[in-house]
Image (cartoon, rainbow, N blue to C red; front, side):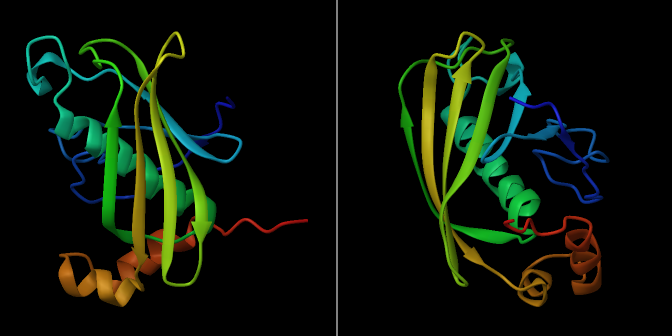
Length: 164
C-alpha cells in the first residue's frame, strides 16, 4: 500500500474523521491502488464484549472508509443507502487494523463500494458492501448543518481522477 495521505479539509464534527471533534477517532486516510485505507486501533471503551470491538464500530469504520474513497476518487459525497457487514473473526481492541474500500460500480445516481478490515498480519476480519445515493451538495445541505457553499468548497479540494 502507498502511504500517500489524503488531506482532510473537513472542519465538521464527524465522529470518524474530524480534526476538531475531541471525541473523534481522528481517522487519517491514504490512497490505495483502487480506493483508500486507514490504519487504526480502536480503544477498549468502544468494545462490545471486553477486548473485542463493538460490531457497530466495525460498521462505522467500513462506512467511513467508503465515504472517503468516494471523496478522494470521484470528488463526491453521498448518503449510505444500504450497508451489509460480514464478520469473520473478532476484531481486537487496542490492536492495529487496516480498513480499506474500493469502488465496485458507479453511475450518476448510485455508487457501490466493497470494504474490508484486516489484521496487521493480513487476516480478513470483516467485510462490507455498501450502496450510496450520490447527492448534490444542495441536498446534503438541506439535511445537515453544513451550507452548500461549504460542501462545494470542501469537494473542490479533491479533484476527480481522469483516465489517461
